[in-house]
Structures are given as C-alpha cells and as structure tokens.
Image (cartoon, rainbow, N blue to C red):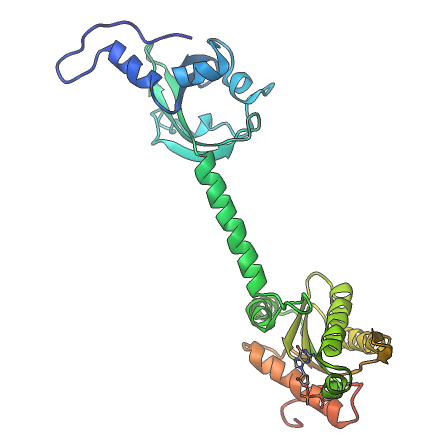
Length: 314
Ligand SMILES: Nc1nc2c(ncn2[C@@H]2O[C@H](COP(=O)(O)OP(=O)(O)OP(=O)(O)O)[C@@H](O)[C@H]2O)c(=O)[nH]1
C-alpha cells in the first residue's frame, strides 16, 4: 500500500510527511482512500494494513466487505455536489457483515495528490457503545411492553387500551371507516370467587384471555380493562360484523369449562356493543356507551348481547 511521499520538513507550524504518517498509523481508526469511480484502494493506514495486509490496487468492496461488486450502501454518490465540489462529511453507522462489528464512518471527497477527487473514509469501531445502546433499547422496549400488558391474561391492560385505542379512533375518524367497541363483563364473578376461591377466579380470567388472544385479528385491540371486564376495539368492522363476532364470543364463552379441585366452573358474560359515531373524538365516551349497553344485558338477565341504543334511549 502506498505510503505518503517522504518530505522531511514542512514550513513552520506544519508537520513533516513522516510526522503525518506517524499520526495516521497510530490512529485508533481505519483511514482509507479509494477512487470514486473505479473503487481502487489508493491508501490505507496501519490500522487497516494490520487487518487486511497490503491490498493496494484492489477494490474497496472486495477487501473491506468481501463483496463481488460495489456495496449496495456505497456512499460515493453523496460525497460530491452538483457543482463538482466536495460536500460536507457524510457520517453513518453500520454493522460489517464479515466481522459483525459496528462502525461509525465519516466519508468525504478530498483532492488526491494528482488533483482528482477521491473518497476518504475514517472509520471507528463503536461496537461496545452500539451494543450497549441496543441492549438499552431492547430493555426499554421490554419494560414498555410489560407496562402495557395485563400480567394475568397476557392481553393489553387498561393503559394500553387507551393509548393504542386513541390512535385507532383517530385513524378511523380520519379514514371515515367504521370502528366497533365490544365490551363484556363476566357474570356473577363474585360468586365464582366466593365459591371456588380467588385462584379459581384467576384461572377463569386466564382462560377468557386465551380465548380472546386466539380469536381476535391482529389489527384488533383486546384488553382486560378492569377486574372481570374486557374490551375489544374492532377497526373496519360494521355493526353487523361486530354483532356476529359478539354472538360467536358468547357461544365460545359458554363452552369454557375450568376444572378446579374437582368442580367445573362454567362462566358466562354480558356483552355491550357500540359503534363509533361520526366525528367521535373520545374513546372514553365510546367505552361508556359500550358500558351502558353491557349493563342493559345485565339487567335483561345476563349472558347476552345488547347494542347501545343511542343517546336519547340510554
Ligand atoms: N380472581 C379474581 N377476581 C377478581 C379480579 N378482579 C376483580 N375480581 C373480583 O370480581 C368480582 C366482581 O364482582 P361484582 O362487581 O360484584 O360483579 P359480579 O359478581 O360479576 O356480578 P355481575 O357483574 O353483576 O354479574 C369481585 O369479587 C372482585 O373481587 C381478579 O383479578 N382475579
């Protein structure tokens, strides 16, 4: 690999070429120069020569990435402006596919010894910092997921229901698409707890959660929003489709049998359905309408579905 020309002394305040060579070869970073058009390697400091040996004249994509053609992420086109002059440094991060380590690259076009513009890259190994960053990001994502999950059933919790649901409501309003909300509350759940114990009650809640997880579409939001209260937000679902789903859920719930200490617990639930009105802005109001419909089901004898009758009738 070409070393810089050997010039002993520079003018005062500058450093000799040997001095520059010493600086470049002791940098804890890779510095290389390659032709912008042919990708031929023109210079590499000792950091690079230690890894790849003397590869002068070979293509940068061959030596650095083990590719058989220019890299898909090559930044050469970003280094020279429309006026033919070098642009400010282009800084980016990537993971090398050969050694799997993370690097930060600072690329810029510079004038080479023969006057042509060439690519200079200064690359530092940022693997430790990047791995810490990624681990932190994963931990945040995990903590956030845990904060939004109902521990008992694995469904969304009340907070997630409002966070995600508000977004869904906004989108449905913007697209003028239908949005249904279905709520249900297990019937006489206190009796289940009192008769079979809290543990048995929990087992019933888990089974109901599993049933919801198995049955809802990925685009739906299913949440446990209170002790024995569940809510489903169904985008792009009209009243007929939501009613069909509710009927299906009612039937499925009746098939649940939780075996607890030789007793079979067969829960039922009361359902309430409400449809988003035109221009509705508040998820709380929509939920309250489904809640009113659900209480109609309770007062009519439970284990059934009722539709929100509208503001005048409610
Ligand atoms: N096992 C268990 N029970 C819970 C949980 N959260 C709330 N509950 C119980 O659920 C019961 C709800 O009782 P109520 O509000 O009187 O309602 P209900 O007995 O279902 O009667 P209706 O709703 O009128 O049919 C209470 O006994 C609560 O203690 C929970 O996470 N696990």
